[in-house]
Image (cartoon, rainbow, N blue to C red):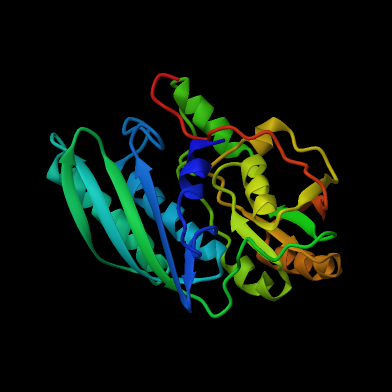
Length: 276
């Protein structure tokens, strides 16, 4: 068993199992963004690090059709870090949060040997989008195009440069699509661990399998940190969802039909370590 999945399986709260915990109308989520596992400082400016750290956290709220309201930010600061770098980092965190109507209201700092950020979001939703609710016959689809995050990460690890607007630096969140599409969706989640792994999580949450409708190559299925949406819906809603996607200027790829079987994609860890 994957160690992350094993850790989660040891928790016994009924709120565990989605991109965030739904407690009444309130949505609680937390994600870490750690040097050596998610980024290297030689790859990204402090502003890029702060912005992406906030975006990957905001993605959980967006994926659940929630409005992020408040954030708590904990930062481990390397001892040699300069105050100018800290200022740039915090400016990016605050500015990115504000774009989504979210305010940083506190957190903590600690000294260490690397730059690590952990962000907790407090959001609210009248109609949260969960992973549960899928039924046999439902269609599975993803928004946008997948694969560039994995491609650009591999380039960085080979010492090459990538475009400044790369998705690895700047995830694109599908907030407007989710809000418009919510009435027609059975379930959904963001694609953070790669399509293969996240489809498996969605199927596991519902105790179902999949009938693939098209082949998903590894360069797409294994590309983590895409932050596009994985959605499940009734076939009768397909035309309406295609129209919404067209209105938002994004593609919608239908790749599978939920079935009563045990189909799973091959799924490995999406984290990396320096030197690998």
